[in-house]
Image (cartoon, rainbow over all chains, first blue to last red; front, top):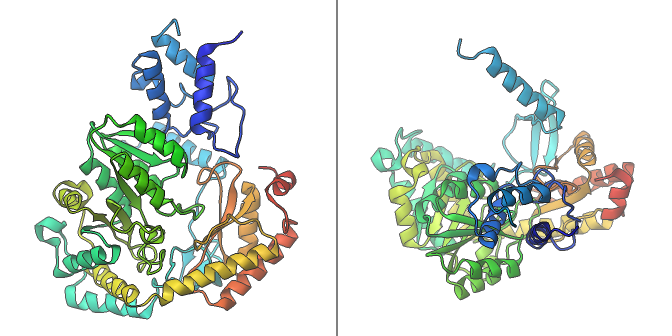
Length: 85
Length: 415
């Protein structure tokens, strides 16, 4: 079943982090940070995007590298603060 | 007992994990001065071996230059060994001021402040000049010291894809509501030797009212027609607001760094930069020798011209031998091997052949981009380069990688 939230996260990560000529498929469980695609420091952009997009505030303790490591987990974080997302 | 079993077990496990991941670093003892040829003890306890050094940041060959060492000795005798003070108490000598003035003149900036290192300069600049109302937009591959500096600042942070000007522009648009925007980039990126497009960055910065900061550690002294750095190379002298750079690479190679740029920014660093306020003054001997370095490279471009020739010659010979190089013209020449184990094996075998060049692999470079990073120097003579190419060719042939491109090397050895 299509999941709009996950699609949005996937699209953002693809546009924001995947370099041209180095195409990688981002699945729901692809490790983004531990896999070296997103470095934990530039994860800030992703957090900001989600906060703006879903009008939420993600506290730092919920925005760890582990919590943001896959599309599945990121979607879980967003839904914790915006259950209808 | 304070250092108890739990603490010790923790550190033992951490060290074991580093070793297990193949990331444990070991030093090699060098018994000689720095130079094109050095005497190395490796592994520790092994007989000292004379090898050609292809991995120093000694771009201009000034680290072991007799004139620089003489200036250091004279500086030692004229100004002493230590100052036992931070700058603003009783640690500023006339020569510190003289060096700052000469660096401003050389870099084409308004004002300069010396630091113990460029790492210190980068630790200072963002924290002092930007606050929560501001944003730093940095290239995604900036040096670790810029990242650390940004972390110390209260400004918001965002990044753009490596040298991707479209992406940078979108970020500048996104942050128009901020009080101050600062674009931060390395002038030259140390792993690939690629050069930031400062002309385009300055255009965007002017269009979107942003300041530009560069760390020019891998360019100061030799990039650009008269060696001023990346801003000269890109034709934007006077348009960069902040340059941080090091005296520890081309500029004599001992230590020290600086922030150089707009007067008010540098003046604020004089007042508030913690690595300036709470760390010792640059040693007189380094200060005196650095003045000599600036004088030498201001008087003639001979050394940077030779370095440019060496880089071009080495690249041509290595490409002709069949190596896959990252394209460019910088004296950093990445010889791409892609596989981490292969990079380590080739480095070891090169050492056996009398060539000292180090393999780089994840996490220093992204996974699947392992390489030998060769760094050329004006201290190298053509004979050194020919010997290095011959050794690379011999080892490359043994591993069957000559003439192979990325996909073929990966097919043979994996990522």
